[in-house]
Image: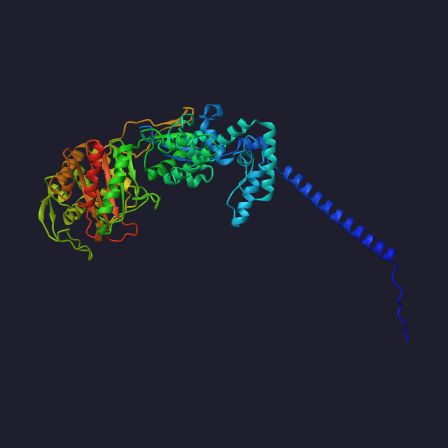
Length: 600
């Protein structure tokens, strides 16, 4: 039998054991806390150690800006990041700073770089919505991020941002920090700083902004790409109304001032920005470095673009295709040149936002009968005369049996009649008599850069060309037979006015027989008087040629007046046929309207 020990443990021993356990736990807790503190301290030191070099960060590299300018000095488009001159706080209207502070950092002049009240409020709101809804960064923190850090949302970056904000507060006054902010903050559409933004959106200095304009600038700070005027004027104005409400709450403006501000106008009375012309701007921009090489400074590129012709041509094309939509025609292109080859207008498509493809210089389309003047010019240069007779009769070339548009045969006709009425059979017979190789050489001299196959159908334009090339070729006819090189850049200079490039106008080479050109011009004038292009007839001198390809896939009119040459093409990007759209219908209508706009 085993006896159970019923002797109780000493209370003193129990207390001693419990005390020892608490002591062990306490020492362990201290070690854990100490380890965490040391780890956190080391991590803070690492954040400090890996902070960017402040001197190098201030220099901040960027893509230099390129501003494309029309011939009247107005801006077409800017590429790259646009910075402008430094504007100091005391140069700005007081409501500019009030608008920014009321919206971005109401206690800017009270905190030391970190606003615990704003931060706590933002955290509570974010927790309530279970997503990032509000930010609690001060202007000092935003300056630290903009000047020295990346936009990556990491804990390390936020810590560095806070440390740099403290450093900024210790080194600069509040007004200096705000000046840094206003001159370096991104404000949409490639602009950095309030002066660049004011020039971009309002065509005026930030020193001259009114209260509504200041509110719009302040409103952009929340989301520059969303609230800038170019992205959406409606959203920009709605956001500005919020800024004005904040200013009333902050008691820096009255309710009456807010109401008056909402009625204010934006920018100057007259717009100094070219609307559209983006296909043209892209074309110019891709060639800038070929003129001046790589550079690291901002430049202005003065071009040949005529703002009035460009904007009217874009509207004419858009409205015309909309009116003819039932005919299954969706796209078009227009190029307008002067007789020296200066591009006065270039419309590369109906809607740049939907398609950046430039049909004026990139699309390859068959010219159809608009190529026939090359055949007749070659004939005139090789001993033929406008009154000479050519046979318009059936043709069978190894099974190829072309026809005239009217399905008729016209027998013996003069060259003038054959071109005026766009007779296919007469043109093919003439091309065979002259020599197709000579015709190809003529087209090359005049500016056709795409491959031309030496086939019987070549005389009817059964190969592909560029719209720009066709305008250039007809320009050689319009100017009396001189060589034409298309150009758009007149001058390139830096922001401070230093000239980097200036176009020199050399004496052009005579590439076509002068008499032959004069005779062809009279023949092309007949096309508008009584031929296929009679709908393009103008109250002043004009000449040109229609063009239509098989199954109505392409329709053209290319022609000229005393001052301008214009090539018009319509069709579909997928090469699908249109419904009965010929060169003598929609293209001549567009061409006539464009020429009337250009000449008036």
